[in-house]
Image (cartoon, rainbow, N blue to C red; front, side, top):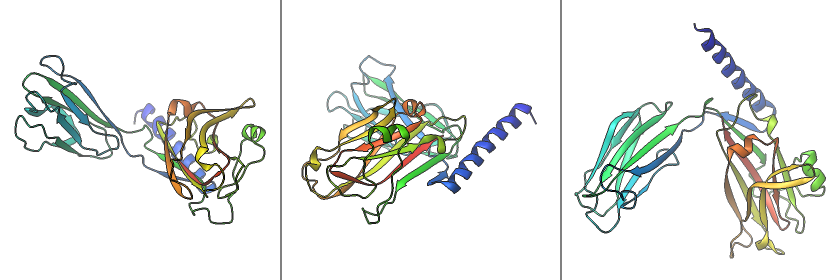
Length: 290
């Protein structure tokens, strides 16, 4: 067997074993990653103005159909065809009446869900056309690491302790734990990323789920959720800053899903979460793929 192939296999095995060991000793689980999908609309091969003649929606998430909707003027959708040879996918274009102004929903099914897919569609009216490229790719290691902090128990006692990096503890020394309903007291927690990250690898996508609650007491509606990192005596919320409460949401809990820029995430040692002082955090879950 080729030496380079053997070395690559050894590296992947080492990284996989690293994650398995971490799963045993920390609040972490490992699974295969779902594909990362998207689409792009570009000018077609007729007169200019194709992208302005259609509204197209599609993935993410994976499996989302491609919906092609002509604007309600002109000659409507005349044709939808597949361009070239699709890669690892079966495409279904439903029958429709040429000139329709109704949406046309194109579905697709991977032949092998463990491999990437790619295909191109062409949609046209009498004068304009667009190309729609659709793809689903896989992260290099095809591994998902799920790290939880706190317990999903709707603030049931006893409280679960938070973890703070030395840098975050220096800035916020007196904070409340998970489930703590106290008002006028900040919540702070650190995901110590080096504990959960395979050596030598970088995340290709990540999402943070935060379940946040308020008791309706004090000024809960003004509370802001911050996500970033503390360093050199300063907390920088480089990933997320938002007042997550709407009027009328007094005395309730809700989930806040935060997509994380992986370029930023890969540059951090710790991922820090800070919640202002009249809201509580039930639990958090960091999903990141490698």
